[in-house]
Length: 349
Picture 1 (cartoon, rainbow, N blue to C red):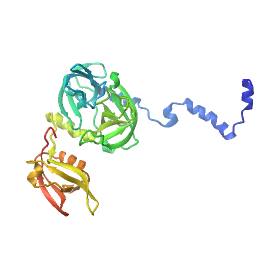
Picture 2 (cartoon, rainbow, N blue to C red; picture 1 turned 45 degrees about the vertical axis):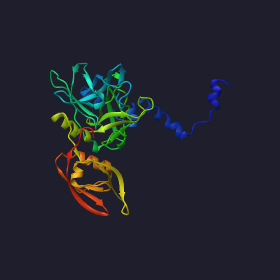
Picture 3 (spheres, rainbow, N blue to C red; picture 1 turned 90 degrees about the vertical axis):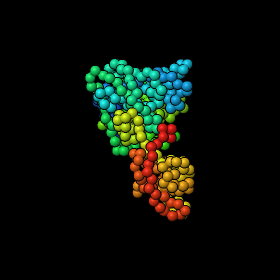
């Protein structure tokens, strides 16, 4: 059967479908943004990329950081060569990145989008949120970006991730916010934004931008069997990062409140009331001085409900050391309030 016979043997197209074909073909010829209503990221990328930097690190360590990737922590004897990303938060040369990017750095170099290399000094690192600040000294003001309000972001909204994947520099990827409030087992302050915008080795410390061009997250980790993007990346929310960045700028360290208890999630029997169950009290701690006991169920902090142990830890950590707070707790089936003067969280807590 020749080609002409094959064409003639096909059944006639339904009239409705035949009439739709020319319109469909015309739609295919139009740009994807017009065809599907997808956003165009070109103007946004042009606006924010000048504030995104690449970071090269040399450090001397006894063991690699488990949060990095082989690319970000390639071991050469005792020297660790690292690469990551960051963004300029102040035109004078303050750069935000991840703590695990700089590690125990002996040398840090920041490269801006125009290819200029700057030696950088580590201003401070907060290990609990994996945030670090660097200082570079430019000849003039640099392009900078601002932090947005991550609480305003919704699942399904578009975002772009920018940084230095695989050492390529000046790259962006797009996606959506897949989930919020993710706990990935990194620490007591886990509250990650999950995104499917591809984040790869070298992206750590780079910004996650909203469509308004504000930084609503700091790209920190990926979930991947292969080490490359599998469509699940995690970013520290800007609302969590903001007070940490401000504290590091002021004094190079973050001071957090501390009770001195170990806690677990629990429910008050018979009432279904959730709270933080005290499993242990450290000797000489603020909790011990206030008379807190093992078995107490904390249900509120300064009148605000505490539903989980994580909520109690984060609530106390956000208070300034020395402040007296009011804990509502259940002990022996009875509710009572206890005043506790918050202590300063030890560095190794």
